[in-house]
Each structure stands twice: as C-alpha cells, then as structure tokens.
Image 1 (cartoon, rainbow, N blue to C red):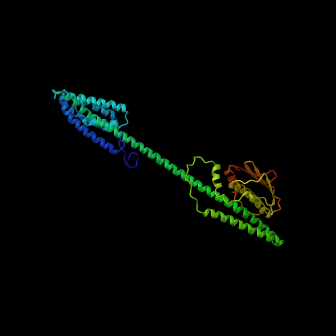
Image 2: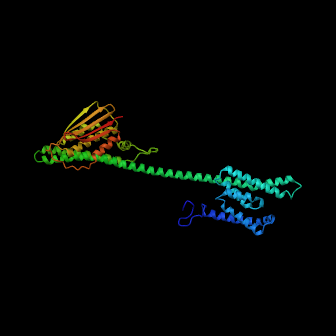
Image 3: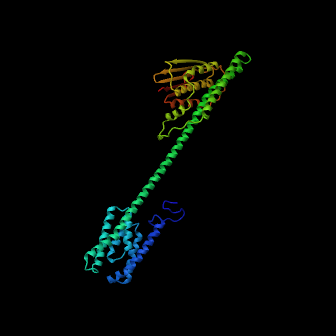
Length: 425
C-alpha cells in the first residue's frame, strides 16, 4: 500500500485528491449540485428575461463548481455567495461552507466568508419574503434570520469540528509513528548493547583462558624439555621435574575447573536496566569485562609463588619490591598478577636462558609493575612454544580497562620490557 491508500501497481488518485473515493464523492456531489442549480436556473432565466437554455446552462456551470471544493474552498464559497441573489445553489452553499471550515484555511478568512454568506442569505430571504407578509415585518425579519442562520452556522460548526478532529487524529498518528520509530531505535540499541556484551564476555573468557592455560602449559613444556635432557644423567632431577610437571598440570586443571564452574553457575537476577549512553569510552568497555569474574582470582600475594615456579623451570628471575605492601581492589590485584604472569610466559617462549627482573612498586594511589628480560644467552634451547600474538593485546586491554597505562617494547640492551601502572582508587 502507498501513503494515499492505493494498492501498488494500480493508478493513483487523479489530480488533487488524496484518495480515489474522495474524487468519486466530490464528482457525485458536483453532479447533484449541477442538476439542482440547472433546475433553479429556469425561474432565474424567466425573471431576468433570458432564454431558458441560458439559465439552465448557467445553473449547471455554477453547481458543477462544487467539484473544486477541496482544491479551492474559498472560490467555491465566493461563487455560492455571488449566486445567492438568483436563489440557486443551496447544496453549493452548505457544502462549500462546511468544506471551508474543515480545511486548513486561516480562521479569520473562514469567519469573514461565513459572515458574508450569512448577510447575503439574510438579505436575499428578506427581499423575497417581505412582499408575501406585508402585514407583519417582524415575522419577515425573524424568518430571514432563522433561514440565514440555519444555512450558515450548522455547516460552519460541523466543519470546524471535523477539521479539529482530523488534525487531532493526524497529530496522534504522528506521535504514534514517532513512538514506533523511537521503540525501533531503542530495540536496535538494545540489540547492539547485547551484542557488545556478548562480544566483551567472549573476549574476557578468551583472555582468562589464555592467561591460565598459556602460563601453566608453557612451564610444563619447559619442565618436560628439562626432564628429557636429564632423564638419563640425573634421575633425581628428572624425578623432580616430573613432579613439577604434574603439579603444573593439576594447577591448570584446577583453574580451568573453577572458570568452567563460574560459566555454568546460574546467573544472578539482572538489575533494573538503565539507559545506556550513546558513547561508551573504551576504558569503561574494558572495565566491565575486566571486572567480571574477579572473585577468587589471583592476587599480588601470589607473585612470589609465581616467580618461584619460573625459577624452578630454570629461569633466572629476580624480584624487586618497592614501597609498602597494601591490599588493593580485587580487579587491580588480579590484573597486576596477570600482567606479570603473561610477561613471564613470554620470557619462557621468546627469551630462554635470559635473566629476568620483576619490579613491583607501591606508590600513592597506584601500583606499578615491570618485567624486563635481558638478551638470550644462546645456550638454552628454544622451547618451541607456539605464540598466538594475543598476550600483549590481552595485557593492554586489562590495564586500559582499569584506566591504567601500559607500555611494551624492546630495550637498548637487546631484551624486552613490559611496564604497567594501575590506579588503586
């Protein structure tokens, strides 16, 4: 369907009509009015001394102007006022005044033309009836006023009512369309927010899985390589490395079970929805993901054990702590731990045999961490660990999500350095 109510593929309404049925209705009214005026044109021609054909033709043309009532309502009313002395155009005057009052014509113009029509009808009625009831002039005036009011006021009032009702319906329709557009926009935004939440949750889970699996498995591979190298020469050390590999595997499985338990746990009732801003800062986006699932996560107190695991794997690691140790928010401690963990994992992958320094600084309002490795000594064999290229990306996302600063890159001495600063507020 089109805006005019016509079925697509068919011809639209003709000329100025909005709908085809409006055209049919106006043509029918125009035909009736033309026949009426043509009939009234016969006595008019006799009074004016004109041929009957001229009177009939004149009345037909005058009555047919009613077809134009929607296009030019003022012109139709003026024609009705002009032919009122000829005592023709009853339907033309009534329908014309109704159309004028219900249209978008300014009210002052409607009032002016309605007054003119009322006066013209009163004068014509008075002039035609005063000769019939000469004994009672008051009756002539009362009758003339009654006829003038009856032919003018009801059409005007009804037209004003219909026009006001039409404008009200159009206003309500516009408001309904506006609300529908707003609801559609809100639905689209809700879908976008839901998709963003799903994507952020997938990213968070992938980041946690990477941190848990990559570090543990990397240490297991390193210990397995050492086990293979000393299995024959030093059985005691081989047994120790085998025990370490088992411990690493059990720890990795424990952390994976805890993570899967969180994913399988029933979700808590969602809080009342709040309108989302049109612009969400990147830091806030990452913060939502970083804040999820921080319960029972690692803390800064476990850094010594983390460094000890790397030492047990044969890496030379020095840990330096500056400032007074303090307890921070769970997400801050977990993020700091994961940054150091991932940095040590990268050292195992890309810098075997290199000396590593882990620095942790407690400052006013922030905690800083740095993991720096020197150049490889070339003696230690490459562990052959695969790298997905997501470690540095995950660390950066975690740190920026809490409003911190993250920097990584090679050093002048040929090593690599990872630095992060997290606000503790």
